Length: 91
Image (cartoon, rainbow, N blue to C red; front, side, top):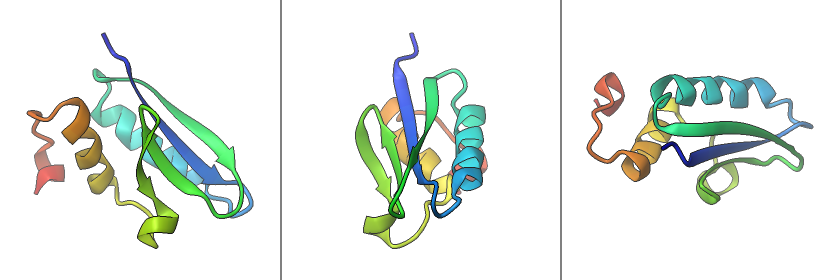
């Protein structure tokens, strides 16, 4: 049963919805059998955080940059499906 959930909180003031939506699409396409949901959460103050099951796995403020799609896929895979090969995203 799929229980794992991803949340992407993005800053509406910064207009980061498209970036968040694109990453959500990438994650849903990659983990369609594993993820129960990917949610987009509007925020403010320059926030761009990705959480898996409530735990922050990427913070733009902490990293000083946005996450790469490949990077997020690897971080999520390592938690929900460690044995899974991500193909070109692992190279």
